[in-house]
Length: 170
Image 1 (tube, rainbow, N blue to C red):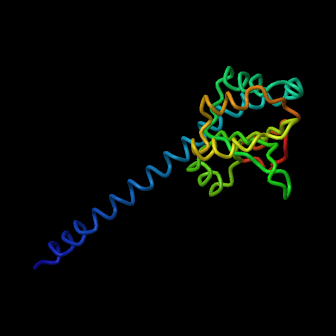
Image 2: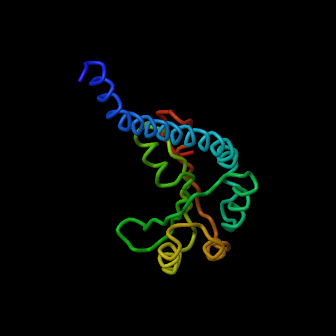
Image 3: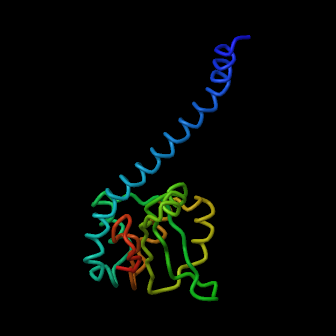
């Protein structure tokens, strides 16, 4: 076997591995670009709402949700937070990036936009079942469940710029 043929065989044998690595890198960069584009689309809308967040204090959740939706910001999922060591729920967290995006944001040290909404009254435990039932998706049933609950406070996080070191609340 000639040296030329031997080298060609080696290259051909390694070609699938090289191709797989190239495809993997391509999709990885596509995900990063998608995250950056989604962030840059959503955040200016959230910044506008953050400027007037006090107008929603004492108002129904429906009012805030309508504002978010009318501006075109996309809520990917929601969760709830218990207050301190108590199992009582007062806070709902709206996330504007999905689980895959969390990983991208963490790896690139990007900010991840989310809102914490504190309600005036304790939220009934049914929210736990709705969260499990819909895997954190903000369905119409969940929206209806939260719609008439009065907002006490709203905190915006991750809206100070994609690569900003300022992770403070707005």
